[in-house]
View: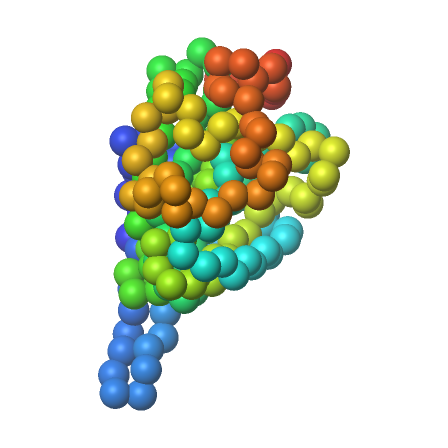
Length: 191
């Protein structure tokens, strides 16, 4: 596996080694010991999630507040998405900046997104099967988000706005500057 820090060093791209022949392929998708060795991060994933979506479905930008804050390891099993992580840690040198990555069944790349980041993705293929591990259980009481098209964030979602499919919840999230529940860069607790 290859581990690469992105332009926001806390977000890590992981590229598994794929062994293939005429029968198909094999790849190790996650190894806890290599993850800790290469990143210096010790985490224990406790829940796996999966969603299927069609072209233009945008899910995000979401995060969970403590005590249910989550780190995520995300990947695509089928199709292609644009994955986005936004730094929402007040005091961070990269506060309000984001990382984007095309994740697909073809490239098998993954992103590790630590606590203190809002996360979302949009489907770029006809359909996509999106899977991710988290290190804290989902809690509806802790679930929160920011507006996907906040002009301050300048995210290019690569899908025309008129073709986006959003939940009612995601249409009504606050702008980053209006969000009251963010994380603190020094403590990684919400403020």
